[in-house]
Image (cartoon, rainbow, N blue to C red; front, side, top):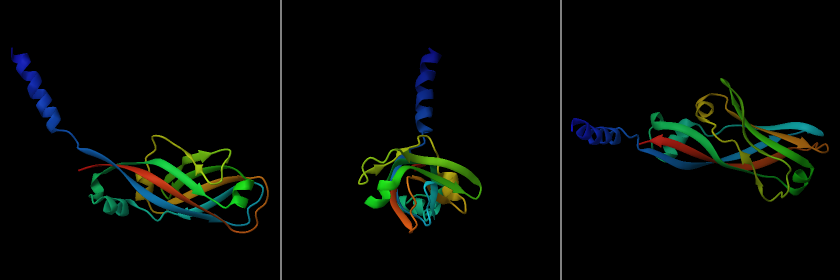
Length: 164
């Protein structure tokens, strides 16, 4: 009989200890650039303009309540001439105290108007966005030289998990 009473009490206690986790999206714009690019592997980059305090402010939550930041979607845009000579792309992130990790890839580039990357699952960008020197890196594999400046735009949709 005591065991039967104990089960509802445990369930009530467990429900009261819930985290009230929330999952929302935040959009980040990318503007990666590089010049004097030669046939083969090349790198475009940009310093991250979005950080943890900015994300917390956009969501109207305390920064300490942020739990995890993943990537829901990553898209790139480039002009037709740039896309024509680009065989593949690899979007990565690195910071002063965090190693380089892959955010998304696309190979081959079939439709230059719809460059939607295959995003890495189960990555957490929080340590990168909290760190100084956070940099987005886009590795391109080019089929020919491109000596002018190449500028690739993009949008990241971040999936932000936080507690209330």
